Image (cartoon, rainbow, N blue to C red):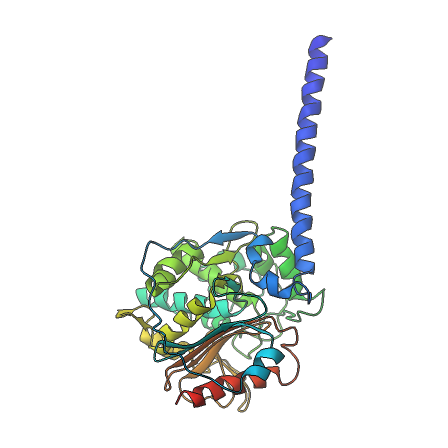
Amino acid sequence: MKKWVKRGGMALLVLVVVAAGLAFWKREAITRLLAVNALFTEENLVRNFSHMDDMFFNTPLTLPEHDVSPLPPAPVALSGLDDWISDRSLTGLVVLKDGDLVYEDYFKGTTADDRRISWSVAKSFLSALFGILLDEGVIDSIDDPVTKYAPALKGSAYDGASIRNVLNMASGVTFDEDYLDFNSDINKMGRVLALGGSMDDFAAGLTGRDYAPGTDWQYVSIDTHVIGMVVRGATGRAIPELLVEKVLAPLGLEADPYYLTDGYGVAFVLGGLNLRTRDYARFGQMFAQAGQWQGRQVVPANWVAQSTVSSAPGIEPGETGYGLQWWLPADATPGEYFARGIYGQYIYVNTPENVVIAVNSADRLFREDGAFAQNLAAFRAIVEQLR
């Protein structure tokens, strides 16, 4: 009888421990879900965008010991920016001219040390990494099918799409990118991320298609995750370690960045990179220098040129252009392009003028008519003042 009582007590203890573990897991999951639901509220936006590691799974991008690359100060008094800074709720602004730091300021209680969320600016970083791997021969061709390197996508809407298609945002996959619709695909994806689900499974579970691959441009953020799946499949390595080795370590950044991840440790490559604003500017300056940084060719010059011209199918004259994970103004001058993220994140590059502008914002009105036009006009006004 005592033996049965003892066994019963042990069983009860195990149940209590398991229940406690489940309760903890649920609490963590609920906390993350609540954080997602409150992520873009007006009272939380600025703080959240500088502290994403408090709310999501994440992984550090640990840089090897290095000297921080210099941005020599050469202050210039820029004028006429106050309305733009206020209207578009800027939190950080860094301007480089010929590699010199000519302007820098931070707003809304943020500081230079904040590591700020990139949102879709991260897509351009992944494009740079892809270009390096393509040049190294790790990936055979940009026109290979994505399923060659990511077989989990066989039978999905991505079956039949090429790497070029997803780089161009021309996969044709059905995907609702409406951030303001709770039930949109982009917000469903966000909940997968917050609750520790698998981004790979989410991508492989997409089966709808609006167009045949390569037919038309349609901005589909999950396309960039597929690029990440291709890179991981081709190399057998994780994106964070590859990005550090191939792109970030050579840049001499000021602080270790971090990626948001899903519950399986897979980097949220389509929007989860977090850096200081000056470090975003360093990346842009490297592109302005045809992929060179401090005497080293980091990104192949031909990839810089290829990825930053409008090549996506179906974009009409007078429309904003799209290359290989980079944007171009509708009336872009040669060598003028930008990386762009929701809520007003930008890296603007004007190669002929050797001007780079890194912007972080908490702009809840980023989709209103005229918001993008105001940003572009401000970038060009800064270029004009620096001539």
